[in-house]
Image (cartoon, rainbow over all chains, first blue to last red; front, side, top):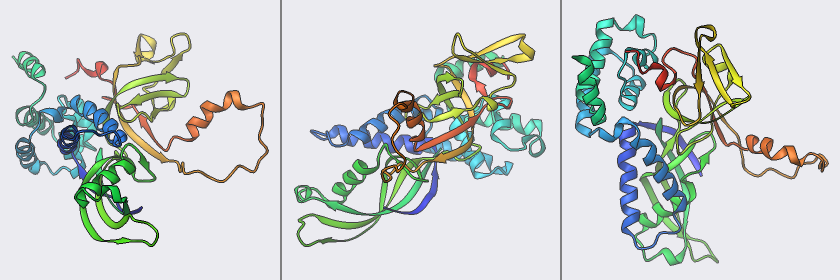
Length: 136
Length: 208
């Protein structure tokens, strides 16, 4: 085994989620699959984890729209990835994800990002309802 | 938190797999070999993403199997340092708080990286954040969701080493298993929660 590049690309949770669902579908389509025990275990456990994250509700289209909307903020790639994966709902979370956010972003901009997250990235249905109630 | 690692390997396909298309057989073989394993200084391997390049297969004398040099990309769990993740508390001990992501358990928050001041309750076996100098005791109970920042990663080479040269100590074994297990963690993530916004999700839920 040779390692050509330990991280040739970074994946967002949604991409992994899609891939693993494919893997799961393929293995269930076959008649008998006893050899692929490790794959089945890790697929099951990772899917269970991913289902608890917001990526479950995302789609290719909404991710593209969200990233396009973020271009004006001059965030790094990893910061955008974190925004996608964690789907922050409060200013505290933005501060965690974005380095030196107090210097780089004005309060209004933080608000704007939070709004973008809320409008462009779908969240769990019950949370959306709760959010609506909080706002009014 | 997931990355693609580009790897190359010579994959051996035994003759009884020849009825399958070659790419399918190789995919199965690679997944059997790698998934749910930690690759040293790469991360925890999850599943094959795609095969980038497949060179011609060859057969070695005395072996009916075919060998194909394959370049492929594998999905690997490898959060970068400073990444913020959410997991569940698995257990607390005087060494710190262990966090699990469901598929990966070797995440440790050492006592020094907890929200300060923190103390360990021996009776209940939990870490407690004494918020505002002990006016409020915030418990870190197992099962709670916790948000943490990756501080460091440690890979340990777990490939079998030669026999130990020091004489075996027959009196020690009772204490050994735990220590031995810890030494053999192939991939350990050290995390911190001592920043505003980090720690149990419920601590920060009402602030918005």
